[in-house]
Image 1 (tube, rainbow, N blue to C red):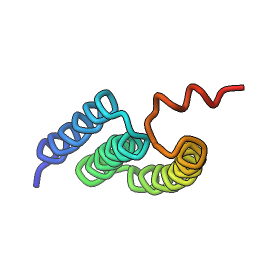
Image 2 (image 1 turned 30 degrees about the horizontal axis):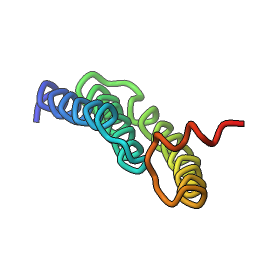
Image 3 (image 1 turned 60 degrees about the horizontal axis):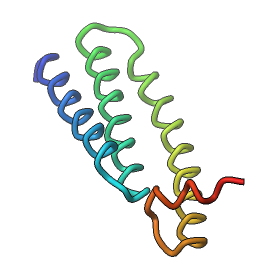
Length: 98
């Protein structure tokens, strides 16, 4: 597998993530789309580290740790949204403002 193959894979994953982010209405689908985009960035980090040298794998590991924290906060918000409205549509989240 060459660098261009890895970058094409990352581009495809990122594009699918952007499409899901723009078209989905449920919060869990949006979170999954953001995860796809983050994984595409991690693939780029690791690919450049493998083929060009450097510390891209460390950046990818740090990004994974940040992604885990993001998912924990995001799922907590989804649970709060579901408990208050019995649905996970993002349209309902604007009603939760103070």
